[in-house]
Image 1 (spheres, helix red, strand yellow):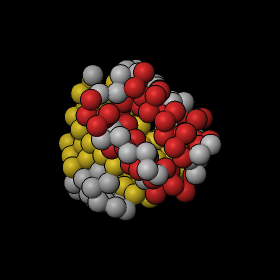
Image 2 (cartoon, rainbow, N blue to C red):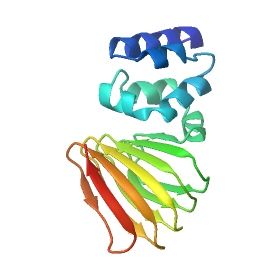
Image 3 (cartoon, rainbow, N blue to C red):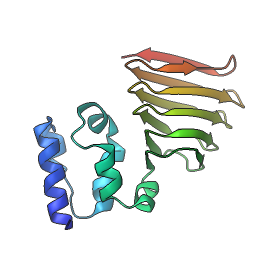
Image 4 (cartoon, rainbow, N blue to C red):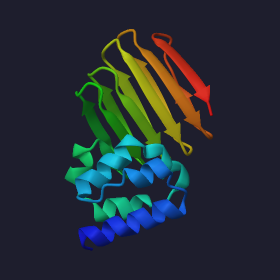
Length: 168
């Protein structure tokens, strides 16, 4: 599928699911990378409204380009090392271990993911968790984590670190 056709299709699907005026004004279909940057910036819309299936995203976007944008789709036995400060990561339908060696990340998890999150630095982190996912948190050092839980999720947390769960 040509880029313009792909961008138009994604735009039409998003618009039909309620893409806001700001999203419409900021739409950038000039490259696959720009489309993924929009997704990584506001993953909640795609996760909650589901204009695109995970299979669609996996089939039309190269795995390396997804990874460059911090997006992981339908990956089993993932062993991800997060080393970039202040970067957002989106994990949809993934299972495995995520080791966070950086500061101030936002991690969005959805679609029946099952992940162990290992935080190796004392910092502030935000986790958004959706769609019957489960996480097991291990804090190596004292860290601050806010978890926004949407739906029925299983969250195991350690006795160290300051972890607050907000059910949405």
